Amino acid sequence: MARLGDRADNSTASSPRARALPYISPTALCRSYLLAASGVLLLLPVLFLGACQDPSGVGLDVIGEEGADPRVSVVAADSVMLDDEADITGGFANSVTPTQSRILVGATMDALLGDASAFAYLDVFTPGEIPEGFRDRTIISATLRLVRDYVYGDSMVSVPLELHRMDSEWSPIGAPADTTFDAGALLVEATVAATDTLVVLDLPASWVTEYDAILRSDTLAASLDGFQLRLPDGVVPGAVMGFNTMQSSLRVMTAQDTVDYPLFEVFTHIERGTAARPPANRIVLRDGAGETLALTFPFNDLERQPLANAIVRLSVDPSVLDEPGFARALPETIVLFGRTEAGERVAILNTDLDETTNSYSFSSATLTAVIQEALLERSIFERFEISVLSSSASLDAIPLIIGPEPAENEADTRPRVALTLVP
Image (cartoon, rainbow, N blue to C red):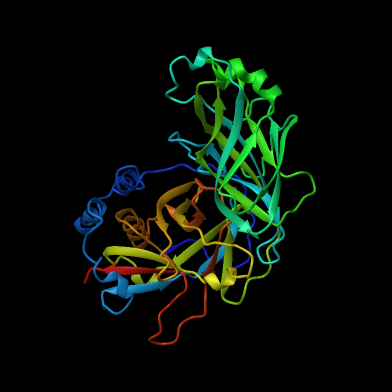
């Protein structure tokens, strides 16, 4: 039987929360399909090989019709379910992989998607260029400058913040979102508006004196363990703020110089409560909740069909997130993965939200190759999975339309794959 995955119901399933996430590039993934399961690979049809080489191949001009052209066959998912998958919310705030462009701090009650809270860790590194003579002059002030680029919840509230010092090494790499690191003494207290675009926290003179020589030395990375940014214990202000790690910095000043130290290692700890039951024919994937959306498609009637192109489409219902005075958002970018029978999770491609159609569409030569293999009954994947792009921490949600089945001549808005077949 030609299908991608075994059938599953729409309830949340249980599986390990943290799994290895190997990445296979699209080129390598296409190339891998030229090998046979026995170790010596069977060559696919010439048309299929061409699809690997040229993503602008035959069928792209008609695939959008989803059935208006006789060459296009639309297959709706026969299984849509939430499963466990650890959110990885740490990384580097520069070009080093893995990147993480946002940290979150705050807390809010949310009857729809579950209560949410977050706090963050960050450190800095010496900038590539510093003024001549800077290392010989005494630092007189230091301020942490955080550029806000995100709000979840009530954007009109005030948010109390605490900045604590970190007194031991910590690493964000591979840490799931429920990880915590021990923090040290309180350095700064401040209350800011959730709408503030720039939050400035003045570090105390005692800290500046302690780290003056270190900040001007070549041993900063080994001598400064960074900070924890959090709420006071027990406080739920009603909003979670997000700060752009690539635009934020630690600004230090001497009598003559102003030098911005970029953020380096960053991590966000996230806790999310239980979500309410979604409306009928909807399922909601929440970023930061340790969830992934698993999909399978039945290809029984298309076995052995040569394939020119494939597009996986997901239609969403933004109205599910609407609530006056409470900010919730659809994620800008999501990722399509394939899950192997051995449990490996392979990134296939990313796609961005189409706000005009309220949908996400995945299309590439690699995806066509993956689905062609399913039609030939030799897919390495047992199912597809959808997750929010991990390089920008958020509390966004995807309210996916999963029904009802359309009437004759009506457009299908369920999760689906549109296949352009070769006549």
